[in-house]
Amino acid sequence: MTEAVMVPMEHGLALAAILFSIGLIGVMVRRNIILILMSIEVMLNACGLAFIVAGARWGAADGQIMFMIILTIAAAEVSVGLGLLLQVHRRLRTIDIDSASRLQG
Image 1 (cartoon, rainbow, N blue to C red):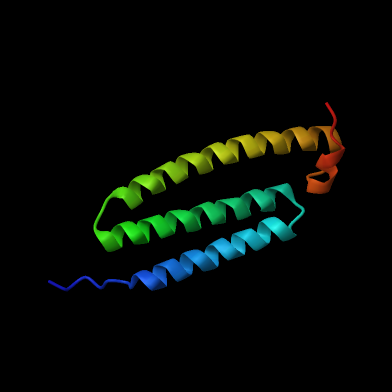
Image 2 (cartoon, rainbow, N blue to C red; image 1 turned 90 degrees about the vertical axis):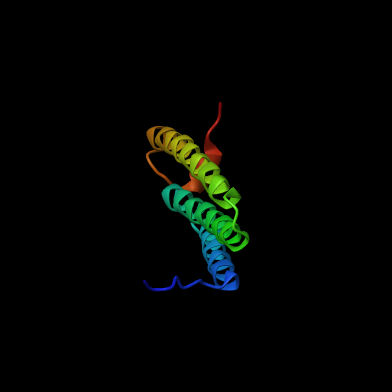
């Protein structure tokens, strides 16, 4: 039987930081609502990865439980975000985030 190879905690946390940075840059730079929602998903997954790595390092299931909570939040974010996207597209015929500032009511 082969021995399991452990990835160092620093490598997992570095990957989570890189993914979070990519998502943050995507949120700040993009104007398309769909791409902004995708960038937020990348940021949430990076947080989940950090929890999983920390939980694996300390041998606790807390990281996996937090990841399940993050998945629930991500599902809620997608449903609310797509609902808002449909309303913006229905009223303005565009999915540009700058046009949403013109919505009134």
